[in-house]
Image 1 (cartoon, helix red, strand yellow):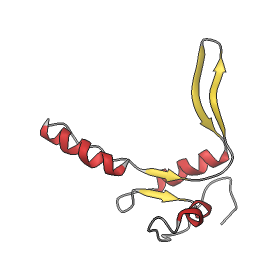
Image 2 (cartoon, one colour):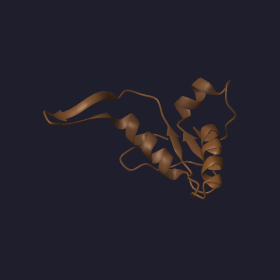
Image 3 (tube, helix red, strand yellow):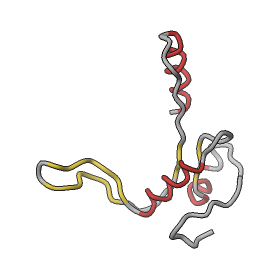
Image 4 (cartoon, rainbow, N blue to C red):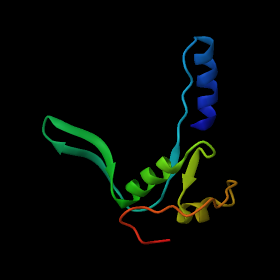
Amino acid sequence: MQEALVGLNQTWKEQHRPPIRIRIGINTGEMVVGNMGAVGKFAYTVIGDSVNLASRLEGANVNITRHHGERAYYTQVRDEILGRELDRIGVMGRSER
């Protein structure tokens, strides 16, 4: 997504449109995926503790980082990507470190 955004922002710059930045939070785990709601009012969504943690990781990205991944995720992909530990992030409602 970050790589695709470079080209999109270049196109938008040529059209005098403002660039956009995105932040990414990555986590693995169990979740519920699908159409949720009632007849006439439903949406395709993803819910669960794993999703909430990914959202918190995304929100922790500020000016220096663009993506955060949870430790269990990183151990699965460490041979494929370059990463480093930045700091511990406190997540309300979770005691795991």
